[in-house]
Length: 284
Ligand code: PMP
Image (cartoon, rainbow, N blue to C red; front, side, top):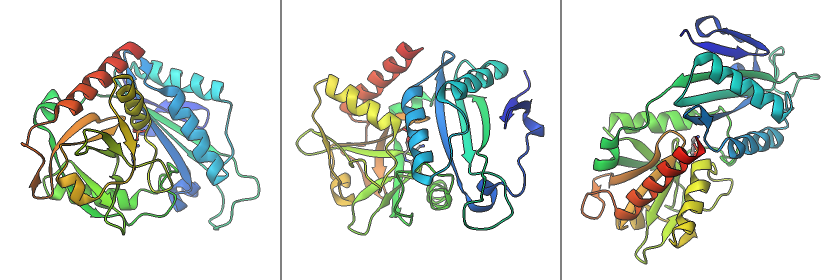
């Protein structure tokens, strides 16, 4: 089945999908996006992702291009036309096409692009072995709560991880506290056995997986504390892991040159991963 993309009201072959060179997403990164996992043909936490999309649009004063119901219909059609059972859908909404000028154009028309792809879940080997993470200064702006396509610092951070043979880079604020990964949220199990993650604020993207894992942990009777933690505390933590739409719950067994605990994925991490996989299976 050949891939189909949605571009402003049209379903077109993926290889022929185009936006205008004066799309503000292209010229200014004046755009927001979402990535939603698809399991057995259904969206995983679709409602949470669309809530966050609407919030991102509101925060940047980009007009909603259509009702939520219409957007859901387009998403369903993109999934159907691409025959996706397991994978993900990507959507990007830009402020519009206009002659290049910084202020908002007079009558912007929000541009909508969607693609979907097949994808296998992360390999079980990653869960068995855990992954390595490096740390770097967080050089991003102070509205990381908005899911904007302006991802240059995140790209540099992810590339640094690749070059260091690591899976992810956790970014660190000026006080030495971990903010989040370049495309993931960061977690530890602290000395008291509590699950700790940074509170949602302008300093991080409030991950939909993050929220779901907080819920699942509480339901399992695990104490959850939303507070910042330092790189030092993380390196001495009982367990470290990361979450995202595409990484689910992934154990971290090494941070920089430091092995976490005994170098094996932690039991709470693995239990939460199982809970998350069960949640995904039940959505579908
Ligand atoms: N932080 C950042 C910077 C991200 O890009 C992502 C992935 N979109 C996340 C966290 C995780 O968010 P989610 O669980 O919604 O995928």
